[in-house]
Image 1 (tube, rainbow, N blue to C red):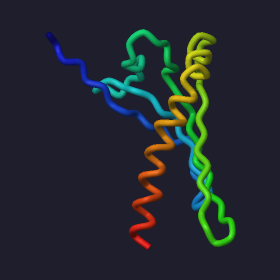
Image 2 (image 1 turned 90 degrees about the vertical axis):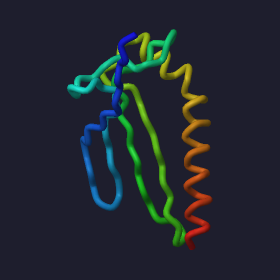
Image 3 (image 1 turned 180 degrees about the horizontal axis):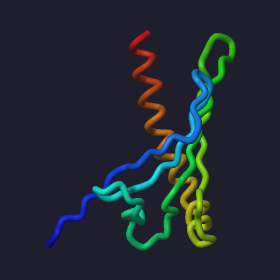
Length: 106
């Protein structure tokens, strides 16, 4: 069986140091061509616009992460909405780990 390699592809669209960054997140092949995400049975958008906004509140940094389908079909948008809770849970777990790490570094 031939191996199919997939790579993460991040295309920055806006960077405003130190306040925010926006990028389009995709999967790509070894040539850098955007490909269909490798999730069997669901029609996930090929491109997702991601944003991180950093603000200061009472001496603490607040990070807001958001994402939305980009150049997506109606089916892809509906799939994105349907899996949103799962993505929030996954990103939440990752960000909780980051928070714990940063607390240990203080």
